[in-house]
Length: 97
Image (tube, rainbow, N blue to C red; front, top):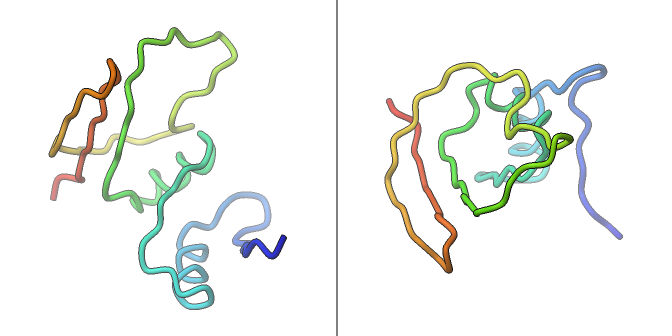
């Protein structure tokens, strides 16, 4: 399928190495992270997330659902935009400086 991929870390994700490879090998300047809670948590703990876009929908979570960030640390973001689309809230945040 010719989907580019990188390997960064043996037992856990080395975010700095992943970002280095994405920029210098693939040429990626901007990254949209749409991973699961494990990769989201890795990037969040590495302080590598500068924006968040969240969609809040009127759906109740299942007991087997995972959090957005696994093993997260405290981060401060500020709301820069909010929108209601068909009863779903779209919230855009930027990291506070």
